[in-house]
Length: 131
Image (cartoon, rainbow, N blue to C red; front, side, top):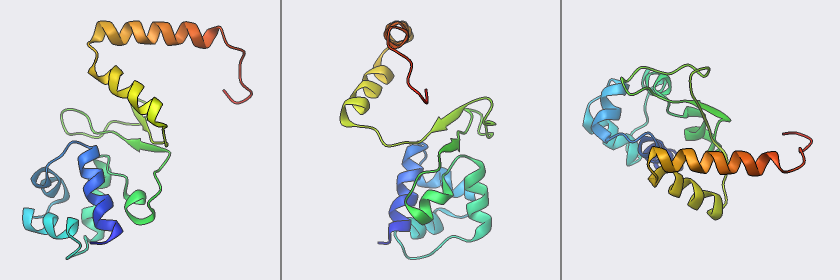
């Protein structure tokens, strides 16, 4: 299995899509999507353009490096413009990942409380040069 096919599977899962759903978005049959993810076939440019429009980081598929900002798909399947919602891809530590997991597991009241505490803590710290 190639790095490309492994990264394609990773991107599909990041977007929360099944193989069948990504195949539909890409305009191919489920069998073709399976072949792409198993390294038996490579997708064409039309497929890549369609899945990129729905938020898949095509640059990552080829290079293994995340794009700084990836368009996120809206709940209705349309692409959200970067002004509406950006998904910033960067490496995180295990501690940061655990914090994000806890935030995602919380209800809206808990998330609001976490944001409030973190905002207060950030304001009490001296400003960094680039942030």
